[in-house]
Length: 530
Image 1 (tube, rainbow, N blue to C red):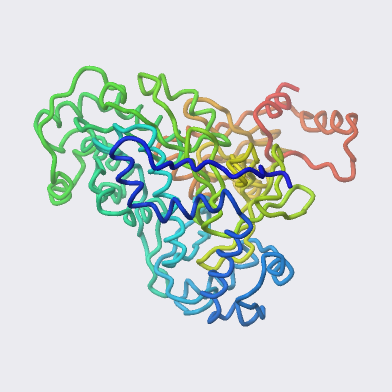
Image 2: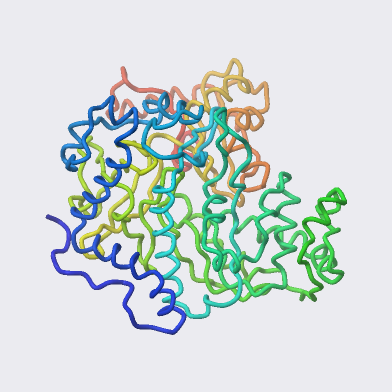
């Protein structure tokens, strides 16, 4: 066994400053559950599996696969294969249509769209048990924040979220963002600390939404700023500078009339102006000068490192960053209990880890330094579901592994969460580069980053527009300014032939060698430069 065999010290001791001790008292059951996962993760995961199976016993999936409520973790592997979203889609379609007792028992109350939504959105079910598992992790993450900084008990918290509902399914279920759902599902005392009313996050126009959010936020005692992607914080920092004079005027007048807000219909302006007060702003538009920021909470893994390096300059001061953890529309799989790497949440969903050879193991069997794809079984009816998220094991807290997100499985262009696949690039290039001999895409890490494409042949269309059609998340990031327009670079005839020749000379099998569609920027630049 690789995990530590010693009994761990809880990260949530019953001593500390007053606000922490009070919150810990209210969360004592959650703390005990988490501590149990550090001591005996196998038992904790078996308890979760049994609860999931019992809740699903009335479902069509349970009956069709002849499951039993007393299955062991090992027997679950024998009973069910690992499935991708595509392989589970027929079941998910039935849930979306409003059919009851499909993947699990009980009522599905919501459908959340994956952050990688493309032409046909992936919509995943939410039920009360799944939500409760995620909420426990969220409350423990907040407990750790407060333990480390008593000042976070006061002031306001700024969270950037998307609407919890923007549509309804054929079966009448609300469809929307998981960030908005989480925000609305928080306890009242947490929502009271929100610096910006939730209604602001539902504004459709991205510029008006961003300006209105900042107008509500300026002048408030904001001590923490939470959003998934650090690129979002950089975008808002640029907006603060660009709209500063308009914001100063609106703040001085107690209005919402300047900048992009000038385009608001009068009825919307009255509704969105509720609670605004007169505020005198200074001359420095940097976020750290506008607010007494003590903590930034966001992703730090994968491509986030590029943006994190830019945060101190954009904020106007170094502000400590806390990893929010490994969360997705599918669930919560790890969260931070300190300033170290997130710890696997083994008191929530059932987690398995698949290495590059295809072998699958449980959390207490993983190896430090090895990368794995997450396989999850959840209360909402995802059964041995292949996430496509690659994580690396970096250490242990007790016998629970610490994890960092590395990348999505397969070839993606993913600077800000857009997850552009090879198929998206091929489809867009097919329309924009008709007659081209070859093409290859990469991320150029500019500020903001952009997709760059090397094209051998004619450029006959707008690749940026075509890629926006193929990938709705890419279109959203372009619309909000988190990505700059894609740039197509013509390369001389024979560039890709020379690349193939070099690869073959290096030992690549010619019969299996394909022209690259997606490369990292270093290899893309080497290809372009010949």
